Length: 295
Image: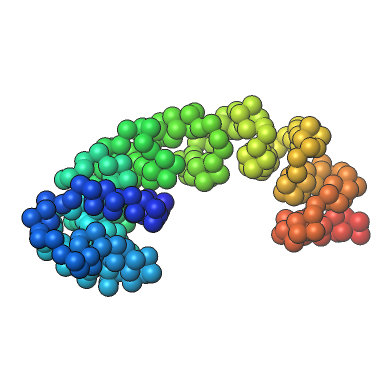
């Protein structure tokens, strides 16, 4: 998950903050010329080990420091993340919860804790953690996780939540819509899929990925091939200034084949790129057209 991938730049900022503010148990330390013994350098050493994938070695470094400074939030998070990487989710949860004591409104920390509960199979606690986020603090990943958790507990609530999220989306997100459509289909709500698709031409007409998603689903759920053929041709003509996806041309060829317009289908496939001609649907359509020619 994206919350688990902390960038080095953010680490350095946190460490500099730690240097400036200091940690309570180290304020009483005597000055020493050996900088490598200072807590910020020990943490940095552990971070470097962790970034190289040496999680066990990083833990040894972190936990030595933990014996002397058990209230260091940065240190607690580093230990938790190391345990996540090692698959020991219960220990990771312990250290995340300890870190939460010193920063209850840390959004990234809340997300990491929720995700670790999810990895540990504790869906109830994962959902409880996500409930601590304000709606504006939820990114697409947390929303997808929340939907999964809601589905585990309450179908009606998850449906309402998804509809609310979908209505507020400004930029098309293929991962969200894949999840949303699968949820609706699995829940026997095919009519809602059609209703959702009706808004696509207005909201996402200039987004080629969104329109490809729209046309592919419409082909699957609508048998009015004549209407779909007109809509596809209109889209291609109106958007001749942008690169039309091969999938759109292949789909139009399939629709024309369904309408028994074999010559038009064959001509449409000429617009498919060299790379697109490796597409399995393209190859199947070409075989079908060849068979029609033999009849």
